[in-house]
Length: 331
Image (cartoon, rainbow, N blue to C red):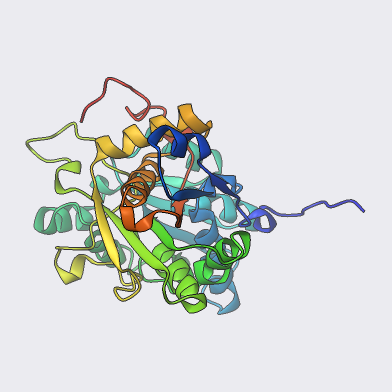
C-alpha cells in the first residue's frame, strides 16, 4: 500500500541512531558512542520537534488562531522550524534573531516566507544587553515587553513553553530507549533552552534511574567580547552553571543532569570536522560540542563497555559561511 504524507508535520521525529564506529576505532575508545542524527528531521534540526509541538499545543488551547502571527526569539534553528510549520499551516511568522548567526539561517527563514528582525534593531533588547550582556533569557523577557502592545500575535517562547521539554519526553527519549533496547548508560545533550536535556533525560531516568545525564555549556571565552570581537560562538548553546539564576532557562530541570561539561568553540569545531572525515556525517557546531563531551566520557576508565548516546542537534550545511569547516581557524 502506498505511503504518502500530507504535511511536513508528519515527518518530524523518528531520527536514527548511528554508532561512530570509525571515530571510535581512531580514538581507541572503550565505550560506544551512538549519535542521534536530528538533521533527519524535515528542516534538519532537533528544533523541528518543539516547533511543531508548541504550535499544535497553542492551537489546541486556543492561544493561536487563524490570522495570527507567530513570533519567536531564536539563534536560528527554532526560527527555521517555526517558519516551516507556519508556512505549512498558513500562519505568518516573524523571528527576532541574534545578529551573529550564520547567514544561512536568515536565508532559510526568508525562503519559508518568514520575516527576520535582528535583535540589535529592537531598543528593548539593546537596553537589556547593555545591562545584562548577550544573555538569551533576558533578551526573551525584553522581547516580551517590546511586543506587549501588539494584537493578533502568539509568542512561542521556547525558553518557558512547557511543550518544549514535553515533546522530548514523548518522542526523543522513547526513540532512544526503543532503538537501543534500553541499553543506554549515558545521555549527552547541549543546553540551549534546556528542553532536549530535560525532556529526554527525565524519560530515560524514568526507565532506568541509573542512566547518567550530562549537559554541555560553552566556555566563557567562547563568546564575543571587546577582547575577542571576531570570536565565533557555539550557536544555540548557552551557560547554565556558574551563572546567575535569572540567566537559566525555565525549561531546564536542574535536577535531571548528573554532570556537565564546558566545551570551547575550537573543540566543537574540531570534533565536527573530524566525524565528517571518519564517519561521513556533516553536523553543526553544537553537534561537535556533544561529540567532544561524549569522547571525554568515553575515555574515562569507569565508562569502558558503556553506551553513550549524544544528541546531535543539526546539519553542518547551516554553517558553511562560518569557519566551522575551515581547518586553519583557531578562534
